[in-house]
Image (cartoon, rainbow, N blue to C red; front, side):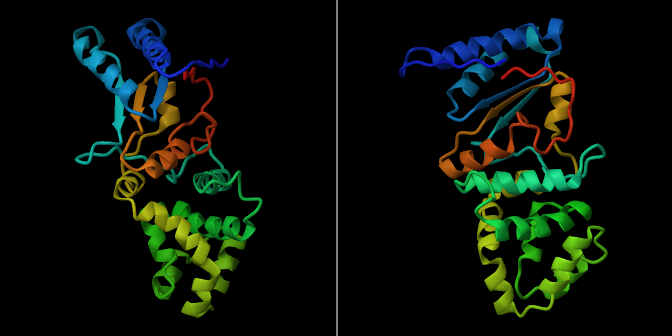
Length: 255
C-alpha cells in the first residue's frame, strides 16, 4: 500500500507525515512495527527528534536510531558490501553497481556495459575478502599492481579472476585507459569523507533489514550542504527495494 501526499508549498505535507510518524512511534509498544523515515531536507527530522526528546519518559523503551548527515563529529557504520549468509553475492554487487549508475543520472547500466563489468570485477574481491569500499582505491590504482594481485588472489568466481588476470598484464597507461570511467565513479565516493567513514567500517554495521524486522525506528536526515551527498545516500540507504539487504521477509515497513 502506498500513500502520496500532494499539495503546494506550505500546505502541511511535511507536518502530516510528521504526525503519521509520531503515531507510529507512540503506538510502538502495541505494534512493535519497524519504520524507516527518510527526510531529504531536515525539517521533518528536527521536528521528530525534538518531539521524541520532549516525550522521552514515555518513549524510553522505543528503539530509535537517528542518522543525521549534517553531523561531522560522528557517523553510523553502514557497510553495504558486508557478507550476508542468505544473499547471493552476485545480486548484492549488481545492485550496488546499479545504484552507482543511478547516482550518476543513468537509469541503469544498459548503456555502460564496460562500467558494469569492471565495477563488478572491482567489487567482487572487496565482498569476498570481507573488505570495505575504502579498499577499492587499491584495486583501481594503475601503479599498485602488487597490491592488486594480492587482493585478487584466489578469487572463487572464475569470470572475475580471469578479468583480473588480464588486467594484471596491462601497463599503467593501458590500465588507466580501461578503468578511467570506473575510477571516476568510485572516487566520487572515496573523496567524500562522510560517505567513506560510513561505508568504510568493517566491524559493526547497521543492517537495515534486520533493524526493521526487529521493530526499530530509523530516522534519517539526508540534508547536507552538498546536494550530491543526499543524492548518493538516497539510493544507498533505503531498503525499500531490498537491494543490499538480501531477503528480509516479514518486516512490516511504514514509509
